[in-house]
Structure formats: C-alpha cells, structure tokens
Amino acid sequence: MAPLRWAIVSAGTISHDFACAVSTLPATDHQLVAVGARGLENARKFAELHGIPRFYEGYEAIATDPEVDVVYIGTVNNVHYEVSRMMLEAGKHVLCEKPLCVNRGQARALLDFARERGLFCMEAIWSRFFPSYVHLRDRITRGDLGRIERVEVQFGFPLTHVERVRMKSLGGGTVLDLGVYTIQVAMWAFQAEPIRTEAAGHLNDEGVDVGITAKLHFPGGGVANIKTSAITKLPNTAVIIGTKGSITLHDFWCPIELTDIDGTVRSYPLPTSKVEVILLNSVGLRYEAEETRRRILAGELESPSVSHKDSLAIAGVQDAIRKQIGVEMPEDYIFKD
Image 1 (cartoon, helix red, strand yellow):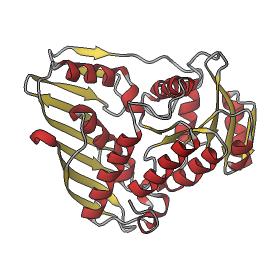
Image 2: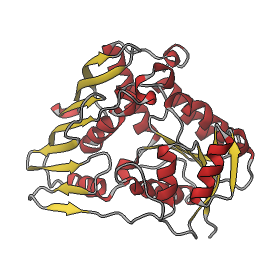
Image 3: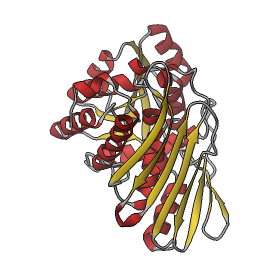
Image 4: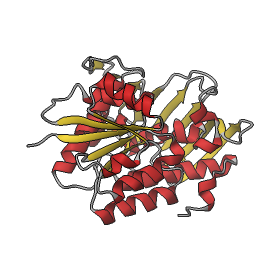
C-alpha cells in the first residue's frame, strides 16, 4: 500500500516538530513531500532540514500539488479556517492544529464543508492519541475509577511575549491557545459534553485573556475545574477523580507518564527523532499522524477520538467562556452558530 503523502503548511515551531515526529514513522506509511511558508527562504530551509523534496512560497501551490494527499496546518489561529477550506476545496484531507477555528460557527462551517467534499478533517488534539490517554479511557470504560466526579486541570506558562497568544488579530488568548486542552481532557474523562459553564478571567490591553478559571458542569453532577495562565507556570497536571480512585496525567497535554489508580507510575517513552524537537514530548505528534493515516485508508471522514462533534463541543465551551469574560473576536460577527 502506498504511503500517505503529507504537505506541511507553515514553517514554524509546531510544524518543525510535526515533521520530526513523522520522520519516526515508517517511510512505507508516511512521506513528507512538500512544505509551504509565507517566505520562500523559510520554506527552503525547512525543506532542507527535514529532507522534503518540494517547497513553496505561500500555500496555494500546496493546494494544487497533485502529489499531496493530506495537509498538516500549523498556522496561527485566525487563518485555520481559510487555509483548511482552501485545501479541502482542492481535494486534500486536512489535519489542522487546535483550535480548529476561532469559534463554533466557523468550525461548523468548515466541518460541514469537509463532509460535503467527502474528505477527512480533524482538529489536531494530539493529546488523545498518547498511550496515557488510551489507558485512562480504558480504565474509565471498565469502571475501574467508578463514577467520575471531578476533574482538576491547570495549564499555564509565561506566554505573554508570544504574539499568537497576546494578539487579538492572530486569534490570541489562553482560552483558544491553552483552554482547548483543559476542556478536551475534561470531556475525555466524563465521556460527555458539559451542560453549563461558569468562567472568570483577566484580559490584557489587546482585549484577550491572559488567564481564566472556569467550572464545567457535566450530566449527573460531575464538575471540571479548569485554569489557564499565560503569566505563570502552573502544575500542568490533570487529575481525574472517581468514586473508586483517581488517575493523574503528568504534563497532561502530552503525557508520557501517569500515576495510576494504585499509585503506580506508568511510563510510555517516545522514540528519538533524527532532528531534535523544540517542544516537550512533541515526537508524540506521531500518534495523531498515524491515526490520520488509519482513518483515511479506511475511507472515514473523522476520528472517533476527536470527532467533529467533539470539536464543535469544545468550540462551544470556548465561546461560552469568552462571552462570559468579555473577549470578542472579529469572527464572532461573521460566523454565527
């Protein structure tokens, strides 16, 4: 069976790490064939570093490249919709970095279009494909934790200097950048969508949040307490608490370790890529790449681990939090759900 042929949109940090991660997978299954960046020189350097045969200035050439099957989109938040739709229009499958879109209305429009085109489209919530998440879900499904009562999750780093976080024009704020991770792990634990959200936050001079606290209420009385910060480093753990015990995911957005219900620390080491990654544990991006291949080969349009319904639910919670703390984006006036 022919390998899945990948193109990468943007030559930034996450795209670099994705290329590193794919390089750890069998070349018979995955090939990086093209990269596009806003500047031709950046694309050339990226291609040279990662052994990618073709590089382009801009993204349109990737859309028209007949040898590309699927596109990984690692751009800033506010162009996810535009670039993803361009690729779908050209008949390419899409794996798009989180948040899939700026709001739920925009996400719904994109996912509906992907389905109309008969193409795979997934929000790149890589966390859910780590063995730690698979183990947690198995434990919950078997009833080992009993009824899930609470999730405690915090995610924070000093990020106020990072443009994609601090600038409204780039779809900034911790709700969109970090909040997606906290929301998704709560949904993964409760295996449900929250029915009510209460939030408070602090905004910067650009009018985007640099930190939030929120309580997500789930069916049956379960609660998730979430916290994000772009100002200080937080514990960055997710603790899932049930009536029979708890499990802690360490570095919960990319966990290679967890503390199990019996206190045992389970480790799931990652392979080493030929080119060094930049972000923590990001060789783990290989898991979502392999899931993408698996679903595309099966002719499926979405993954059950990050379904279209999941992405819409996460976007809905993000919308609710932003509304409560007073963060508005231009897209909110264009794409209404």
